[in-house]
Length: 199
Image (cartoon, rainbow, N blue to C red):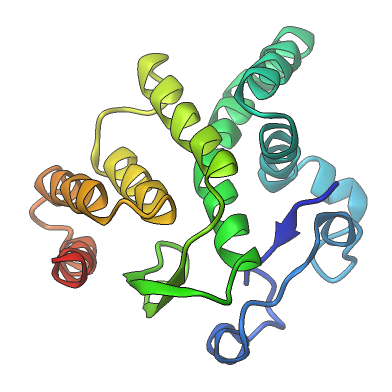
């Protein structure tokens, strides 16, 4: 596997400290074997395991091979269909996070990171992997795996940012804001900050 892991989901990682030094990046294989995260047996039953396995397929072999792999998993184990569907919905944002973590040497503009929730310098990544993420987002909407809601538009906006398309990203974030519930003040403020940065 040639993916990279940059999540700060384990208790021992201090997010801001890691970010100040640049993202903590390790080969995905070592993440799968990370005893500090959870035991291998537990991890294989965890949604993150399916998400990362699916992400690896899309990331390394492209959209068509990734979809074929996903459909095969559904066919082999229909009982896990819903979990796999949820995992697939997180693949685009996972790909863009991997790419953003890998290419952290050329500043492009500032952004509000959907996972870590604060402003930071943003770096553009090569486009082929991100195009796979964009194709997958379109597929997820068409297949009703993702709804045409705030989450979809936010994920699309983030993907467009990684592709270096700030104007398209701005429109996506504006759509996300319009579809956010009036009482969801935290997300409203977060999206407003993102729109302000992109303008």
